[in-house]
Amino acid sequence: MKFRLASVAVAALALVASATTAQAHIIASRLGDFYTGALHPLTDLQDLILWTAIGVLAGSLGAARGRWLVPVFPLGLLTGLVLADGLGFVSTRPAIDAAMILVLGLLLVAALRIPASLLCAIAFGLAVMRGAANASDLAPEANRLLFAAGLACAGYAAITLTMAVTLAFRRADAGPSTSWRGIAIRAFGGWIAAIGLMMVGFALAS
Amino acid sequence: MAMLVLAALILPRAARAHEATLGVLEFREVRPGAFIGRWTMEPSIGAARVDLRVPPHCFLRLPEMNCGDKGLVGSITITNLGADMSAVLIKIIPISGEPRSYTISTANPVVSLLGAGAPTLETWVELARTYVNYGIDHILLGIDHLLFVLGLIWIVGSGWRLVKTITAFTIGHSVSLAAAAFGLIGVAERPLNACIALSIVFVAVEIIKQQRGEAGLTARYPWAVAFSFGLVHGIGFASALAGLGLERRLLPAALLFFNVGVEIGQLCFVLLVLALFWAHRRLGAVLPRWGDALPAYAIGSVSMFWFLGRLLRVLAIP
Image (cartoon, rainbow over all chains, first blue to last red; front, side, top):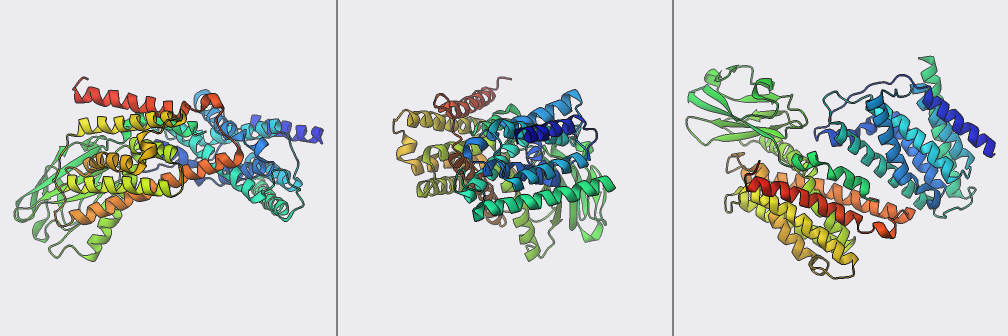
């Protein structure tokens, strides 16, 4: 099992490393660059699904493992943003985002008790990817610092709230995945995986 | 845990954001239907870059604008205000009758100028939309106000005590906002802004006291502290409306809608902070013991930085 999980992690890292282009959708909030950074992910389906999926996955694994993501995820977003904006790191293709959605969905379906370190690695890699993707949409005149702060705050709030809601729904910290609540989360993972599969197909077809 | 939120709050530029940049464009009627227009306060993007559109029957080439027999009635639009400017105030000074003012913001780039039969239902709707949005913008960009509210939440916690505290703050700032807007009280803006920063320092000290087991003033009488500082912050809110020169008959409604906007923004912020507190408790994601005081020191440091900066402005030191 550990070997498979390691393979998934290596595959995810390889996907991140092979990243090339991004779909730009520059937006501007009436409230300035901080709020632009905070609201920008909400305009992107990939961000919405991936953030939700990683939050639900972490929450379903219990508080002890999930809580590490509270600092790790926003740090990953900031790292991606800095890498993309400062060093020219290029964000991902839609197919890679879709593959990540599929992988996270399958992890939820399988209800694997992955260790905290691997969960953090996946979340960090994902956050770097999405941070870079968000950076590619930065308007030239935008204030980088405010945009980054907004994005990190949004990442922190979204991941923390999603994990807490999942944990509250799941109730037992490490309860059996066969309880109806566990099954509901697995079914949710099934939907995530199905969306990922459709997006992979769509990305490959286009 | 709230360090990330605080990190954003710490940004120096954010402190500046609350001081709304306002452009003021005045149209003075010199003959029936003919106006002389001038920027009495130039917007931050520069007057020449403002994309100003007037009603189609008006011919505009600043400083002149001629609207003929129909007069200045219809829509004025500015679509390129950008994120850094809060609003442009259009002042119309007719040959006879009261001067009128309209606010254009990024959220509401169009204003309909009132005709002789105003105010109509359409006017009220537009007024509500404009000022509710302006109130929301003002509170969400008012990092200092939000930091003060965060400090109050930190001390008071949740439940009825928080409801009473936030309500007291609301009543306080509503009273002084109305008083300042109606000209009953007047306070110089620079010292006031320094006092607002100092109020946040006070709250930060109160948090530290509470963490040391001492019952500070805020912990004992949260509603009284919230009300008192609400009065101070309300005058600060009023400074955002100062100089708008609204028609006196529309001022109460504009104030009401502005206040509603401020409350909507404040409520969103309070609910988000409470939700994050709950999430942290649920996840058991709390700061280690040595980091307990960090948020209070962060709040205190930022607000002291603002206070000193604003004090220098009071003393007119560049």
